[in-house]
Length: 54
Image (cartoon, rainbow, N blue to C red):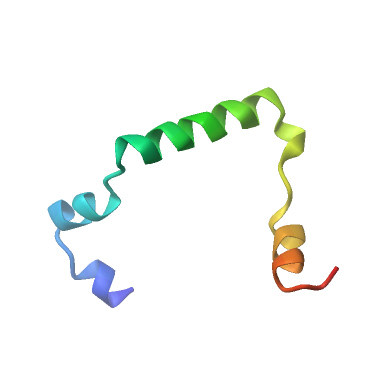
């Protein structure tokens, strides 16, 4: 966190800049979520699956 805090606002902005492809994918995912918000999985479930605790 100290490293991130050491960056200037301009440096942070560069680090957070999205490519057009990344922005399009985020927009697509957001639209999909808005159409079907029930399809999202809670973090606890995702984490359990990632850790192999079926």
